[in-house]
Image 1 (tube, one colour):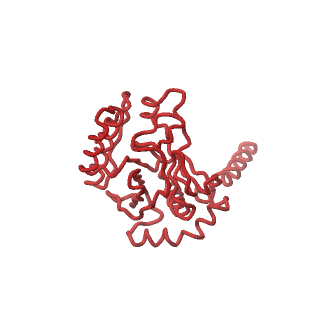
Image 2 (cartoon, rainbow, N blue to C red):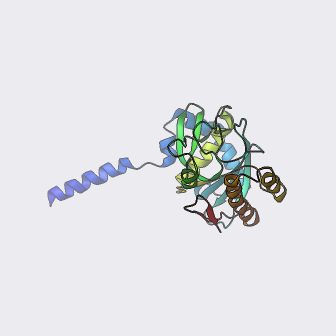
Image 3 (cartoon, rainbow, N blue to C red):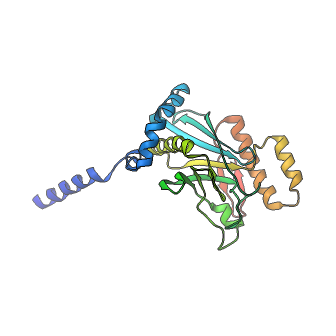
Length: 248
């Protein structure tokens, strides 16, 4: 009995030191601490202005390649819909409209993604990794040479990523840290070729009418774009075995 109690005491003691918040883990890094010093007041002001509680924060990112913009949408966990609270300029791009299909094509991916990595010691100051290649990319991309390591990051250089400068990545990074710290395990990121208004969409279709790969992806992205614009709610995305998506 005494041995059992000693083991339980040891487990409880070890457990008390093994769990730390994601925010505190990130703050062990100097750049993240500096980001909080420089940008936490901006974050709290934006959330207060939009009646969003920092302890209930959830976020969604939309990126538009042609416009060189990343939109930050946010809401409380209990809210039905998102609000646009910030916009960031993508300061440098590479490639053209259309998805990324292989390593070295200089393309910024297009599609439905989420943030899967936080890098507080990035070569580009701070960086947020996308889960490229996603299921669709793996099906439609060049097998064995599809590439990877696509980030939203600092600095202002790119060969397929989305840089927003060191100053702006500090802000966006801590927004993402706060959301993940609140339990948002997947922060969705949708990357569009452009803002898919009817006019822009029709222009893209006309220009690329023989490219079935682009046309299929853009038709799916258009559905997602329209649903979110109308409802300010995230559509449900199902990845199909063809590389296409079911969106509802």
